[in-house]
Image (cartoon, rainbow, N blue to C red; front, side, top):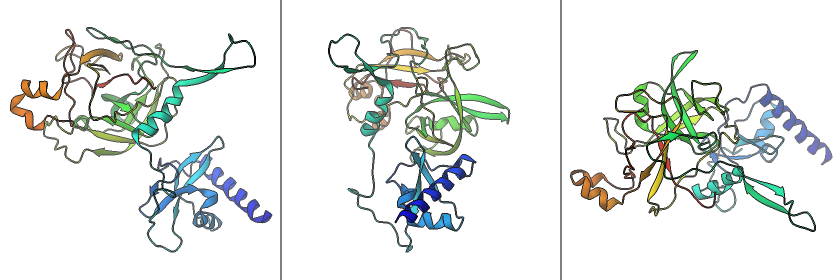
Length: 336
């Protein structure tokens, strides 16, 4: 038993050495318990007999992700008998809903400190460590540093040394960006920049990082013919994102109805019709109108007005329109 444990430790050490040397630059970005490569399950390396046997034969396993402070590998574990995996949802496969991941990511904006006021034994308290979005922004204003840490710039390559930023998006996990499908009309989308504020300045309070795009998944019903419906795409990044106060994912809405009457929009949009995009991240408040209000206003197109496209109004002289680099809009959640 002792020698078997020693062998496992040696195999894990070998795997970590391979990873640090670049052998595993391409992670699948899947959590433990996820289905991988059609007939596999993401498991810790030490729990995957086929991966352990493969390492003995110098066969490198596919890495789903890493876990813990020591970056223990989670590998795509294939069935040794070649039969298709049929895991039980309650035990083998872990699934994560948008609300569960929102709760998990909300921990990024909180930190625990000792309360210096209370008398007695040391007591900890939890405080938010983020910039609160200021509401009722009229006319559009520059965003504050760290105010919208989910915002992403999306770019094409003019040449290997020059990136042209053509769209905006939102970081929704440690590997995926949500954006507009029509962005691909500007060219092949190759890069994402996170954590930036003014993309031509090095003197702003920002910590930008660039990530290469390796995959794109458009909404299956997006037709690309200047359609405003189902204009959604997901962009997969080459590696997991490094979270910081400047880079954090946004929560996805899971409610069927929206009670809020206003939302905050942000983006590097054009400063006027036909004008140039803003170099600095901007923000503005928009009214949210009901479906019925929109049907009355756009009666000729009412058949397509549903949850596929959230109707939005305007506040003052500010508006989201063509050329706003896929600006995102959001509302506050009291829990995060």
